[in-house]
Structure formats: structure tokens, C-alpha cells
Image (tube, rainbow, N blue to C red; front, side, top):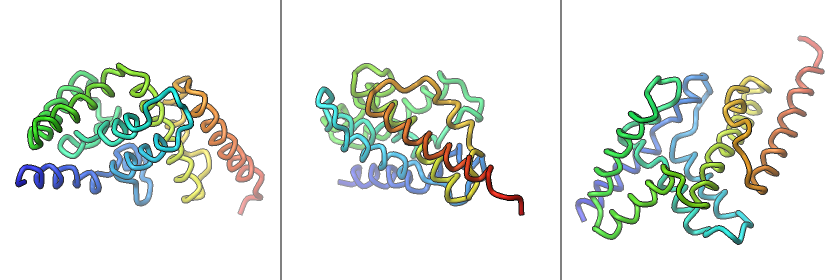
Length: 191
């Protein structure tokens, strides 16, 4: 059980790893990696798509950023190549999963690889959830900080990346609300 405890303590660090993109943008009280993974798991849980294995989607959401408890949240602005990021995360996942029983080691590592290589419909769906969750969070930060439109670069990075009908519909709702917030701010008289 000592190894399980070590695994849980390492994964627990995700609660204290802030999402780098928000830190770089000086967002007040940025979400943690585990905050992000939690909402993604909820998003997977509430999908209506009967062609997807919902349980697998939830598991993928919970595993996809697990390596960040060791390597941190490596963002594009960190200028680390995708290959190097993948190498570091792969080593971290090997270390993490070795702390578990053989069956769990295999299951969790294979889930991570499935997401990394986008090898199933579920992995592709969860990748879109990852991007969608990010822009929901951007919308919330713009609203909380009363700065509509200031996190445009997060929206720009997701342009053209959504194809799943439920996610496309959700993104449309996000954009509608965001555009209304921007329009309202632009119509406010100067103070």
C-alpha cells in the first residue's frame, strides 16, 4: 500500500499546479490542473453521444494531464518542443504507473497513450473537451475580472478544432455569451 499512497500523493499535487496559460496572463487565482481535469470529466459524463463509451471518456479526462504532477503544466509559451514535452510526460507516466499494481499500471498508462496518440473516437472527443473546457474557463475569467475580450488568444488557438456536434453547439453558446459581454462593455459610457 505504500506505493499506492505515493501515487495518490503525487497525483494530489495536481491540486497545487496552476494552469500555466492563466499564470502567464496574470489571471487572479488561476485554476489548477486538477480543476481543469475535473470539469473535463464532468463534461464527459454529461455527453449525450451514445456512440461513445462514456466511462472511457471520463477515464481519459482524468488521466490526460496526470503527468503534470511531475513535469508541471508545460505551455506553448515555454518553448519546449512537442517531442520533448511528450518525452518528459511519458517518463513521468511510467514513473507514476509503476507505483500501481500491474493491472492498474497497464490500464492507466494505456489510457494516457490513447489520449496522446488520439487513437480512438473517445480520445478525439476528450481532446475537443480539453480545448472547450479551456475557453469556458477563459469566458469565466473574463467575466470574473470584468475584462471581456481580453483572453482572445485562448479562443484563437481553438479556431477550427471543434467537430463533435455537442461541442460545436457548446462553443456556439460560449461565443454568443462572450460576444454579448464584449458588446455590453463596448456600449458602456467611459468612466
